[in-house]
Amino acid sequence: MEGPVKPVQLVYHRGDSLNAPENTFASAESAIIAGADYIEFDVHQSADNVLYVMHDETVDRTTDGTGVIAEMTSAEIDRLDAGSWFSPAFAGEPVPRLDDFLRRLKGRVKIYCEIKQADAGRVVDMLDDFAFGNDVFVSSFSADIRTDLRRIAPDLKRNVQLHVAGSLEHAIHHEQAHIFEFLEENVTREAIEEAKRRGLETMIFIDTPNAELFANLVEWQIDYVNLDYAALFRAVQQEVLLRFDGAGLAS
Image 1 (cartoon, one colour):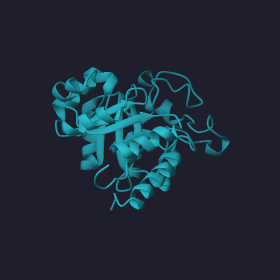
Image 2 (spheres, rainbow, N blue to C red; image 1 turned 30 degrees about the vertical axis):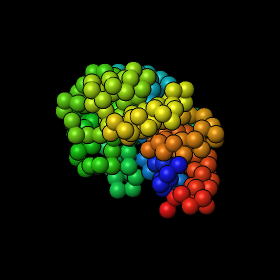
Image 3 (tube, rainbow, N blue to C red; image 1 turned 120 degrees about the vertical axis):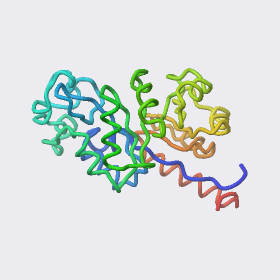
Image 4 (cartoon, one colour; image 1 turned 90 degrees about the vertical axis):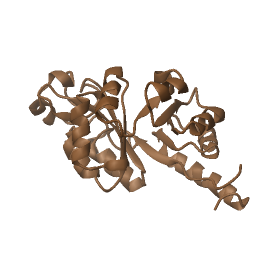
């Protein structure tokens, strides 16, 4: 490899979700303490149009309640316990409202906002209100939401996944993506290099403790890793960087 080997930026998937309940203030705080570059989180909208940080369309898996978020009022969601399912130590942890969540993170960490089901314009307005600027990128699996994002916020950095776009060409010309994301089963060094050559940043989502792949990703110089096993990745990355430093190839 020629030139310096740069550290990959760590995106903590749903916060520090191995050590705290996902998509909560607690998981965000734990990720920040651990040194996250970015925190990834998901957004849904309640029946009365309040934006919440939660992954699933229902509250069943990660709270003590049941129901579809889009059919629940903010008063109902605010009463939920989003921590006890993970551990009694997190009993009483609320489902974060997006504005409270952004307020807590502003100036402390960068963010990756995945819009699950919500008004894209309202999410963008809230991101603008908190002036995250270049410290944010967004994505959605919803084609309609991605279309809205391109229309209302063309300069906002957007991520699209290979398995969603179907090809790098589609990601560039139709999705107008800024970041191209891979999965464990479709990432290759050649694909990363081609995306970079075409002007995109690169990212992978990986939720397994694959130390061999982690080392490869550092060597291949992917830009971001969106992952659960961040501590393991950090340790592997340090070994790789030290190896290349020792070889005189990194600054």
